[in-house]
Image (cartoon, rainbow, N blue to C red; front, side, top):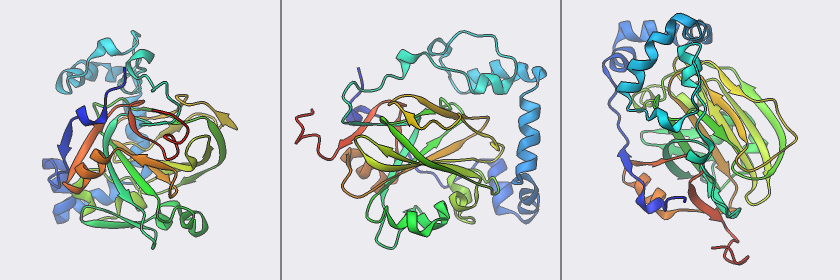
Length: 295
């Protein structure tokens, strides 16, 4: 059974980082070091290390610190810490609503929602970002004017695989190279993080929600966005890909008048709260679902 969004928990949007994040973003020596750490080559090296067998000793401590319920995941022997990090959950633990008119979350995460204004910008707390700079495509960005931008922030303890939200077909994918800032709110005060980070996006024509863009954004020490080979068509709930170690973000763009989002998500965002969601849970519905007789 899919939970009603009104029963989901929230967390405050925090602009305070940990000790390491404060050092890196708020001190001169830290920013010098940060200029090196955000390079994709550093993230690639970190990925190689975390993909090596000796790192398996990190798994038990990570599980304990993050209160991960391993009974939810498939029982396998992990070859490395990163192999554990991209662990696969049991299908029944992330069910999609049986109603195809329901808008499902593509991933686990902390969700905020923003309108895409006529000037194609959206605001995340103290920083403003343009859809054009995010996509690096002025014409495509214009198609989403007055639409909705959903931001799913994944923490290390979240399930780091993600799925397609509807049946549909792929139009095209694009990879954008960049640096890899942390997605914690502290970095947004100094850097336009989502516009600078390495990212990939896919433009999709979906059956129930029209043209949709899903953007996967890397974070500090998450240099690898591991999307599966592009398929011409896909089904609702099909796995799209996964992030390797660290926090990361998925952004979804919807055109105007294609879906209605649960009003509690907007309310939470306005009150500086993120809504905790799980992959497959209902967060909204097709705009015409009532006309079609869907519940």
